[in-house]
Length: 434
Image 1 (tube, rainbow, N blue to C red):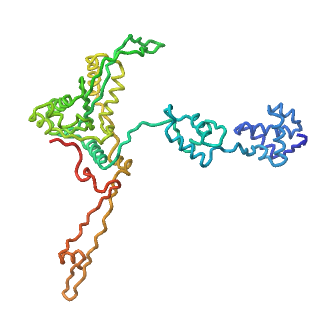
Image 2 (spheres, one colour):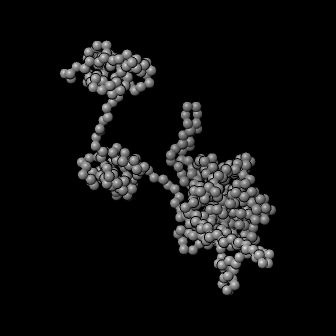
Image 3 (spheres, rainbow, N blue to C red):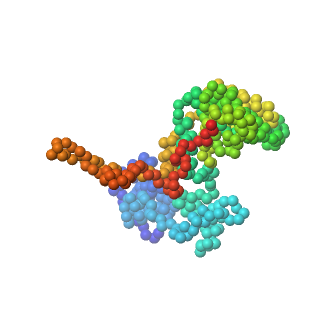
């Protein structure tokens, strides 16, 4: 810093710097450089400027040098910084991504940034790598190996689509008292007792309960929901067997809907959800009498979320089953009180997933319909000698005159993953018991 730079600002430059300091809307570093230039223009020495502006002596010197060698804009702005050399480029970055997507090492359930950095040190020529370097390279590839989602991963095919649209069409229909729609499912509930009595809440203190509990077995809940009229019914049983399922179906026919001609039941594919369960519980004549008034519609495999009653069970767990109940009788009383309140309010489920939305979201799973070739139009030719018009004979007419049947013109359907159309595409779906 032996070279001394003399600062001489023009009137326009002084006004620009003064206005910049008065507004206070620029970055702090830029404002300090403006103060340095104004102080240097007044004839102050570098030591005095550094002490007044609260910067180092080298900062004041560099600001004056950039102004003299360049201009005002260069003095106020920062010079580009090259930074350190980028690590993990090209093949090394691809190796990091491949390692993060592979299985974690033995004894670890997932990859961490430290594990990935250590693995890359072994696989590359780098002496050391920080976890932040790995995080930045993974973030550029939209990858976070320490996170994962749990979601249903079904095999979507023609059978899946057919059952899905069958259930969605039922939800879209208008309510019909003669053919009501009900959703059926079950859920287990644990009977949990207190080892130590909880302490009630009071001002300034929340309710307290002990983490230790006593398990007194389980109870099964059969849940029936009518989404159209906001009605639900819950039945607690000791087990979940075919006989218990058959009893629920008989109560549905004889008690809950005695006047209905046909009850359409939406349910999942549990092993007891079959028409044969009624023959295991009742005489053949009684089983057939019940089945004549039932129409089963099954959700696709691994897609019980299509059943509206799942929403009802979720509300039940949040509102009612959050407290501990150690006795089946106590649990039945709690459930009955919740059921009365919900039925009185006629709370309904707002179902928004429709067939159109399903076709938009699952469009890759739908078959592609190939349009047929268009028919040739028959052009009429006039017979001037006879004064009348008659259609020209087409190739189809000529084939018919020679005894060759004309080809059918019907749309052909191609399936991406199967050689022939699946059965659900040719006939209606739904497990219908008559």
